[in-house]
Length: 422
Image (cartoon, rainbow, N blue to C red; front, side):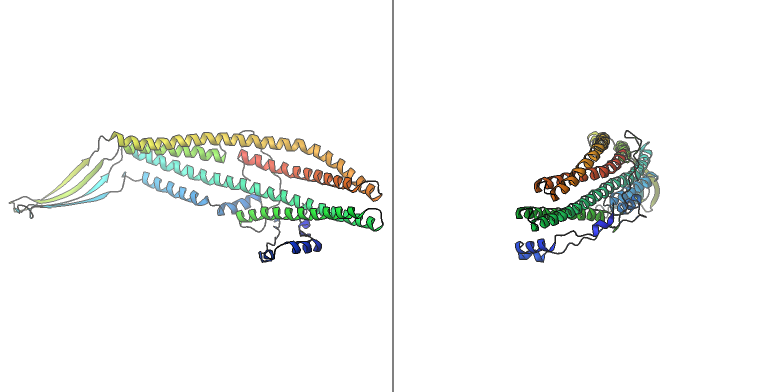
């Protein structure tokens, strides 16, 4: 697509501006300007490079980093020899506020939470599953960014195409207006034809302004996502030969990792519900009542909780619900990916079928337009019939050019649906 066309006039002529100044309120002059700086093409910039830049700015990257930190924390905990952090126990007992017979006891110890038989291995599995999920989360976010950029870039392509056609329509309207004006000066047509031609010209100017606004919006979206003031060229992608969603699809990989993490969390909850055993190792220094000397001793205390089945069930059922939700989300993701793939394949098929017919139609209506313009100059065709021919020819060109872009767009969307990253 020729980038030079975007340097042409994108705004109404002086006559139209004069009319607008008469009808617009004075407050419109206070609106800030929105000058559009065209987004240049950098042939050295690839789509993959743009995805890397956009990925670093993507809001979900914060959650990816948090997942990685969480996975590291659980891995460290699984490598610990204790089920939880130890605690210091201090106790002092005396009868000086009671019978005051000289009883004194000092006790100090360390409370060591112990793993259950499979508790430590369950936590280690959870840490590993979280690490896998963290890597999968990074991949699925990159896949989401790729889909966003693919869509935005082809939106820009469609907007540029519409803008180019709007400029062509304006040029056609300008030539028609000049022809009608010249024939009116020669006395061949009535003044009403001149007014109709000028109206057609003003309508073409309006459509050019609207096309320019759509292009501005599409390019601003790209700048907002990437932070770049340049874009990669519109290179068509080679369509993937895959015809179904594979297990290595980024979204499916993440869904499987989420299920693995949820099931590992359930196993930890089941082990934690039966744990709580702790070991107390401490020393005691005591002097009995009516005694003269202190006795020093070392003791070991084992604390084994029991009962409480209702509280254990609440913790296990909560983890089981999360696991069930992860499995349901995976099933929904498979359905969504399969549907998106079928839609992309069907859309590409429809575009290819329509392209041949649209090309034949464009060739036919272009011939009609050339013949109509010649006939009008000879006075053999009415102005309204000529305008209809020109509108039909423009619509045919728009259809063909949009289908050519849509074919590349649908190819990119098919690759996105199948899980191919640029």
